[in-house]
Length: 396
Image (cartoon, rainbow, N blue to C red; front, side):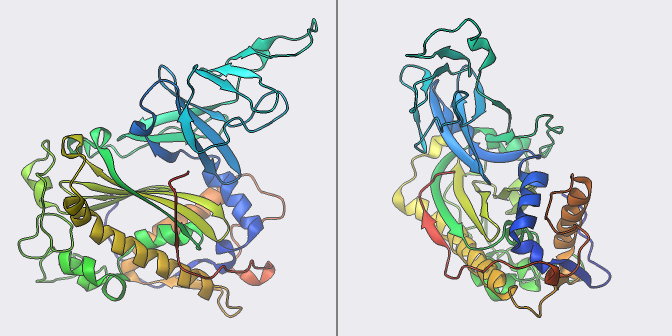
């Protein structure tokens, strides 16, 4: 985790147009979502040979498949481009991927193995038509894919080994559609300036957050956590033992936030983890998959114990989604050019600078606003969608 060092002056935020402009959204899809490593699932969701799951990143549909090892392909038939998997998940009973249109058939490695009803021609070679494969990596039990032809080095956090993240299993999943740009969710996760007015429940357990992100940046006698708290739940009490590999300091560290850009957010406690997988669905919308992860020996938890562990982050996540939606709506004002980062929002500023740098280094997209543009007036804005975050099924 980067050094916590407050800003020494107000810093300008990203241009307001970057949170709603369709052309700029396409530029960010190309620079971030189609070029970086993206977390898309948990390994446990594809545990047996033949298991598959569709994930969507921007306009791209991918299918994860468990063969002898995990593979990913574009969800597109090599014949005429039909979607291969039309449902959200399942298992291939004959270990074959069959196109629903003309029945071209592939094995789990992506190799074309049959083309029913095709009249033979001397120039046809099935070896020329495997599925388009996508790079796959795993870390901490999470599956990452990269759509780039030449993926960048995979750099996951080199820590949390003793937490055994790769062995944890999903005890609860909530999927929500949020009407806000993906960057607003990332910025929200990066700061606690908003915590006192937005998260009273969280602040009662993490008492340091009552200082609006300034705890540890100036002299304070306030304790970091509620007296007697042993994990992050509404009352601070734990019903599970800490992860067995933790040292004493880690057992006393009740909360670690970790962001693996651009779309994996982790709330790490000594006895469970709440993870967020975020997927952009448009210039002003995202889908977030919230998972509560536990040691498999504890699952399934009783209804009462599960509710005990889910409640705090469920409340907090809903509060964040609601406020990001309010921010998305407010940024439509013609008078709003960009926001400002105050000293406690140093991680927001770091994120914004990373966005700017990535866009400067990315190939230019025709019609997209310049990554150095400071005014939203140069581009026509989209219309913000109103309404609260809506719960959805688990699809990626």
